Image (cartoon, rainbow, N blue to C red; front, side, top):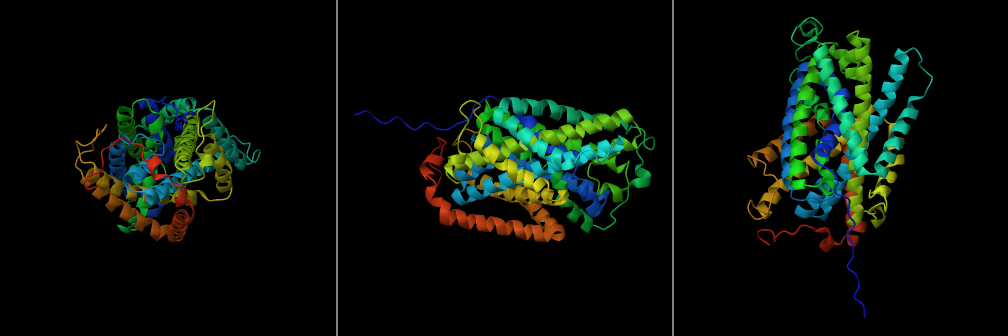
Length: 461
């Protein structure tokens, strides 16, 4: 009698380095400097937007530190989903997986919308408006990037590395071109910068869109199973990415608030491109058009990568139908998960306003960050320092998780004040999804198979 062959674990190829991790995180987020953040100006004025930018920077620095510690240890596809699965339990893992998929898919949709609006605006400035429907560019962006992700992660994220670097260079070039060392020469902060037109409440309201400067940096963890050295590459790529974004966010605010009245800036679709146009430099306008286009493409590309990895991981663990947990036999990508979300993204892109898709993405991210704070507390309690090998240990615990919870609570309130209906709708959706999982899907989950880390039993068990 021949013994049955052991089941082969479905896995992805380890081909990425720290630069790819940086490109994945910054590539997803850098578009937040080119669009979306400026809605915070409309909520509370430019000073409130800057305050929200820095407070959100603290929130995401906490996220990056906590994420780096856990994921450099739990190096599996799915990022925060894999963390929740190993540390909290199945129901939390299911919800975190949904948060990730919704956050990245809605961010991808936002990028597609801005791509269409940007190209339409550029063609209008060239005097050839009305020749092409912007929705065609939205659909083309989603389909083309899904195809690139389908064909392989190395080529996809190598492209992200190049175009993300070019988009960041566009911000630097615009900053230098506006001569920040010579106040009044180009930038007119004395005339344009106002205080708090809506009072201190404006700072609270601005927190909603302040997160858009950094939303998605936690996506670096989605590549954990495809990185050659997770213990080194994930913390290095994530933390350097966060530093890059802090610099880019502050420079972006400084340039835009010195070139546009806050009333216009607060509702612009492509603020950095508009800022370049206001300088009167044609070459700078073209460069910022390309920079904005590169940023939206890089972000949408990274979002497809991250959403598909989370959905693939949930399918592989049977949290979702096992059909999604398949790897392409030639390209070694989660191709079914990639293809599944193409029509979903297209439907939202052609039918939903930009501020609402941004809000849906921010809310899903916030819910994930709240559970992340719980994850690090349980992680340190169950496996104290010294019991398992960590690639990175974040400092000052538990201060980062307490700051994270506080800032998440403030942002929930800010979202409720401006978009209470969407907040209630999203919470209702996740409650119904949780009930579906408990009643109909939990029975398929194989808890013994999903715990893949070779760790000692948790303290107290």
